[in-house]
Image (cartoon, helix red, strand yellow):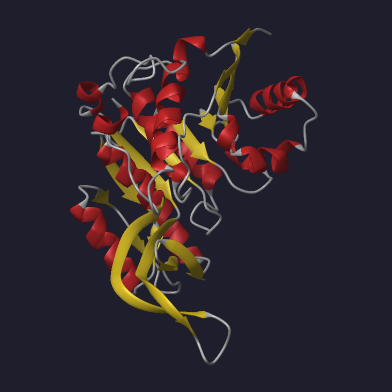
Length: 326
């Protein structure tokens, strides 16, 4: 087993030695994102005093903003990079679900959302004072069997005309039948990129690549002692799941790709980390667009790493554009 170095992707000038992002090719591709959609709601305000009722700050809300989150943020990032995106997910019959559909349309995303009246749309509400997050309140509920069945019923037709399928798993229940979705995509001849959750990675067998972060990888294979031990565990998992590749995102340690060709590592490029919300979504979206545009896994990881470094310098769930990458 060989070990490849990342010298060719080391920062060199503005584009980090990667050349130009394949914008023209990206405009010709369409990516289907299926997964846990959510609404990220932000209340921005000022803190000038402590509450007389309890030792907590009083935030005078001056601005409110809603953004697409979860799988919807992956689709949003795909569009920002110039590609077409369709989005499948489950929402409730409520205001948050309607807002996700509205925002998706405004972003140019083809929304194919399934409404499950038995659940509430996943909503994450953040209260910020002077750009610092003070509180996050989550509203979430597992979908019912009817919603999952409707999602599966529409998945095959949603894949028609797409080049890649991306599965964004946030453990909210939308991907409870992920094995069937992977089988459908492979039957259609489409590569499948998965952002996994939990410790049971057998659910993702047959995907093209999975992209766990450092903590998620440790959940799946146990703690490793050194890089050689990590490579052994990662390659064993890749072969067991019949994956083409496995990418571990490692925060300040960069990213490490494992494939049949060996190990490929690239250092992190973040200059200043302001907010990591949604960074994994941006990485997954960039990887999908770059790969669908015909780039090698190594080059695609280089662009994904660059995009991740940019987005953590922004507040909240955000996107990176092709212009920012280049």
